[in-house]
View 1 (cartoon, one colour):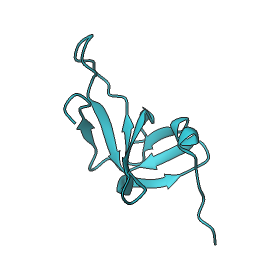
View 2: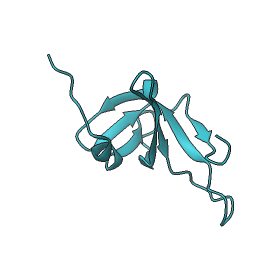
View 3: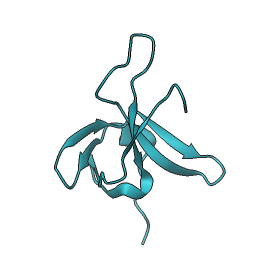
View 4: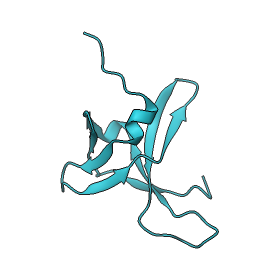
Length: 90
């Protein structure tokens, strides 16, 4: 049986939903990729607050292992291990 494959562009248009609360977290803004192993490490989602006009806000990072299901138009995740990701520091 062949695994389903999704383009990065298609994944950007999928809404991310927390399965424990049903809360909509937003859409994929960016990806963290391990270039040595050719694997996606995590999805980066827009944060909910803005630091200032000159600094990007902290983003939400969803580890690939926390993805429960990739559907046709949504990605279901468990949010137990979600953390913020600061583009300015790393």
